[in-house]
Length: 197
Ligand code: HEC
Ligand code: HEC
Image (cartoon, rainbow, N blue to C red; front, side):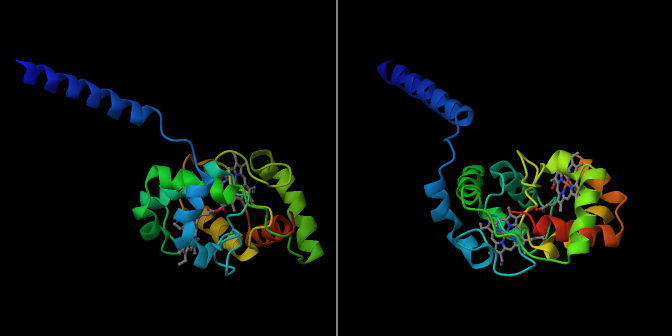
């Protein structure tokens, strides 16, 4: 009889701890995130500045944007750069911790570029409302990516992939924004975004 009561008590405690654990996830921890991000440094840099033009900078990228992209890679909705394999080992908590680490780093430096392209890009960013979602200085917000100081080659690739539909975005808003852009528009927008800090 006593044994049965104790077993019940243990089951009740176990029930509450598992459910509370699911509701109250640990807050994002940038220090733990740095340790977990060691395997990312070779490509994305310890300072969040990437080692090649095809690899995006992650420094100052909004944490929610990093987390959502990792979730999309892990779910195989987005593929590229081997990220769909790399993200499979990450738990939700790992993603939040790593995102907290990278988002708190100083932004990548502004890149110089062709002044005509940059001016044209600034105009398109305003007439096509890129800045109404990505921020006045394309600094990103919430789940919307930071474009400022990003590698222009990376931005061109992503815009073409989103335009063609080979990269599917989570709610379709970015797909509609990219659909009407010409190759020249994309080059200009990438040069403009890269020139911002
Ligand atoms: C072998 C190089 C490599 C490694 C290692 C790597 N990445 Fe990536 N990562 C890339 C490339 C390349 C892309 C661009 C993929 C594409 O073209 O869509 C990318 C894209 C991303 C993006 C999307 C950024 C955006 O602006 O949309 C995030 C977030 C990211 N990586 C996080 C990580 C994290 C976190 C790790 C470590 C757990 C990691 N990566 C390890 C190469 C790498
Ligand atoms: C209605 C809001 C909205 C508008 C307008 C918008 N975007 Fe986006 N953009 C997003 C969202 C949301 C994402 C993330 C999409 C995803 O992967 O699910 C995104 C992603 C991107 C990316 C990929 C970034 C990365 O790091 O991988 C680029 C590049 C981009 N947008 C450029 C632009 C440009 C250029 C314009 C204007 C022509 C524009 N966006 C207009 C919401 C918007």
